[in-house]
Length: 315
Image (cartoon, rainbow, N blue to C red; front, side, top):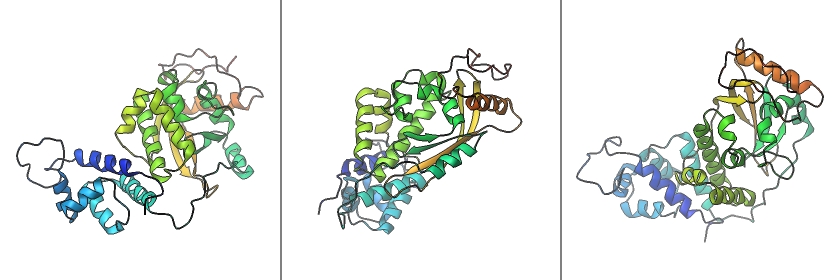
């Protein structure tokens, strides 16, 4: 029986790219003679996983239907997969199984009032909700002020909702807004790759990936790497057009709003007692001023001087 979504090419490319990055020495094998391709050979992965070469070759061609969890675990160990990559491999396996019933179509849901109340209660942190496609579907006032360049970007959808992937890859100004643009787009692509492995039949997600693949060579190169990411909290710097340079800590949290669509709550905050905290307080005060949070920013603070005097509010 055919899988409900033909993800054999994703399985093939993922396993092949993971195999190519491991040297025989890293796997505890003799290097042997000259190699035509980087990394391990298929037969070497098979030995490490305790399966036949024919069986592993069939698996790497995308025939994952019916493979047991124990065997997938063995392959994950042989390929030195981290926890996110292991989860992605299992998601690919689940997606390839024939459905016991017709799968329910993923359907966008409204963010319930209780979540909006939660967001609004965070006055000194920028908090927002994204779906699995990285659309921002709800924010508090400070998040809207912090990500003002995204909200005023031409890459927002017809409802005025920003999408991190569209903004990073399709709006040149994102290179100025995000200090580590390369790191940001790599993580963003890896998150979309993970979501595609989990929900390969998501039409809106496929359309987004198709759009980015068509327009952006930067996205195509990263998509082909098959890197995945699930846990991605850390720090990020922004050159805010009004507040200047901001170094913030962020943490995403799963938000179980609906069984039909995945959501995540992300919170950005500044380290207490720092100039970044002072700048976030200024942004918060501007955002609390009627009409300010929705206005395009126009300040002229020196973006490259983190120690500069605190800027004034937007005009």
